[in-house]
Length: 189
Image (cartoon, rainbow, N blue to C red; front, side):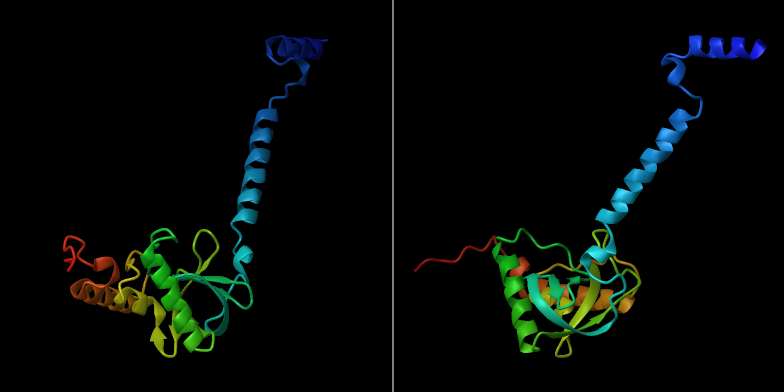
């Protein structure tokens, strides 16, 4: 008899009626968190950009996507580590970066050598690497030519940060690409 009174008093106090159970909100919250995390993992999975662990060494390039990104023959996308994102793909600097990257890759018969640091994947699943063509670091070369800016915020490799900073200083001093002095207007004759 006492048990029946307890159940009736619980249902009277509940706003949603007899369908409310004390652990139901916690269970729904847990289920929601589980579904959202599963979805995020499937969308941002490194396998969307190719194999989970892309090995260092020689690879064949299928396509130059833009200046700092390449698609390899195995489908993996590689972004050149240590470079800031270039302006929109319609800008002249970005188009020049893509042209220079394609020319370097073609000159190396589409073969590149990849080396990785501790930070191997970007949050979007793209591989981050230093790319060499014919013994020249493409990351450093794009910065030296002024078609990319050095990003020194990545983890480890003080040596590569110093090389990229030196290449950027060289480009800035020579007023190449991004570092052209726009305040000087050419005279028309």
